[in-house]
Length: 91
Figure 1 (spheres, rainbow, N blue to C red):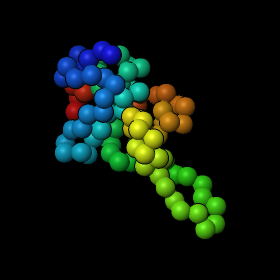
Figure 2 (cartoon, one colour):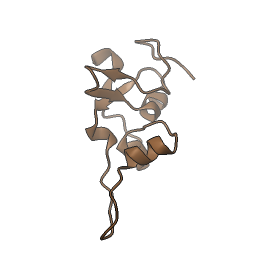
Figure 3 (cartoon, one colour):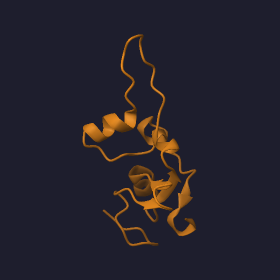
């Protein structure tokens, strides 16, 4: 996998900035191909799930962690590959 042209770290690994207020999406970053793409954390990585009565609500982020997947943003997990985030050099 290629590295970020700004920080030199792998694009396919999530990175954090400003404590953990900003997090990069591995998929958005890999699609961009040049820099990490950051979003507000955890807002951009959460996704509302429909839950039937009596079911336990588990976030898709928790499910992704349990299944061992990289924690991509909610847009990527939903199949919408956009890059409205902030580039690594701007964080």
